[in-house]
Length: 234
Image (cartoon, rainbow, N blue to C red; front, top):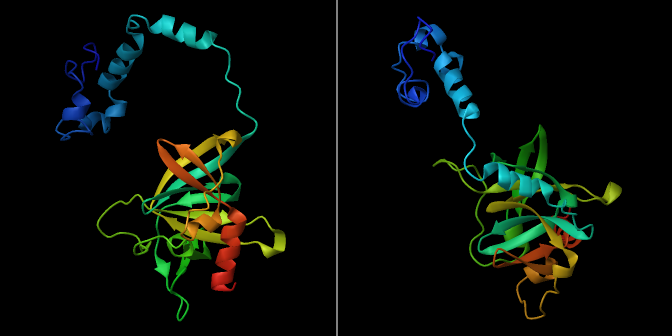
């Protein structure tokens, strides 16, 4: 805060982190300003930060960066969402993706909640079928339950996907162990799935590509939707 302000004390070094709202809240000025963002100390610190001298080479570095020609995106690249199921890294075309959301309570379906069908989940006020890709793809190990964890945050997410097949299409919710994000993959980088792939996921993959030293299987969304329809009989 400014020393010219008679209501507050002389400035402290990042006092908002120690005695302000981000600290132990012992600062007496909170009675006047309620929150550190209203205090002249923070305003003065911000002004000083933005008015400081640029570090050596900073302006030259930005000049070189802005002088570089704009990178042209590969129009033939495929946009995919990369995610993890157990130890497997897989991807789905983003055209099939509606949204990614956190885990929420599952409602079991009597006499139907077994195998690939996890249950029903509320997505924006609508009950959607939540299914297990672990079971559909025949991945080794026990398929996890995508109920919200009681012991804190988890990397698991729910993918809401949609088939674009008109009246025959529909939405599904797929539980995954981790979402890495959207990637653009050059179609020239896609390679065929080896015939030696024996587990079920090989039947649902249309190609493989390399990402961060990992082999990622690109799922064929049509085969996935057809497989879910066949197993659940929707």
